[in-house]
Image 1: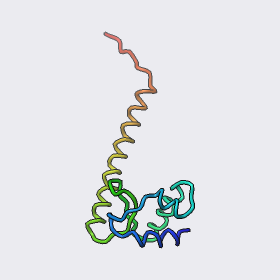
Image 2: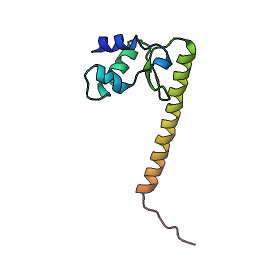
Image 3: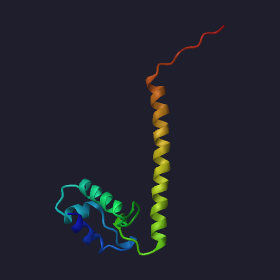
Image 4: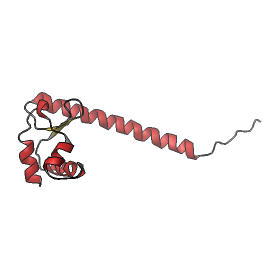
Length: 107
């Protein structure tokens, strides 16, 4: 299936030709795109440069120039920062939410 996925992606060069995970799943007879995401991760580990975009047109594609690579990397970095901020907020907020307030005494 990984080879088939790679062949499909080779026909989707450039962000304007991006293909969604759901469309890839349909073409590979999968119920959903979970398996597709796993295969994409494996292909990336094999240095096959699959880029992704969450803005229109959203989906996966191969780069045609350095600008597309830089845009994808910037998007990933932005999501990392946002995820780190969300993690921090949940950690602090969760601790406050689960810890009962202690009333201070006046001296």
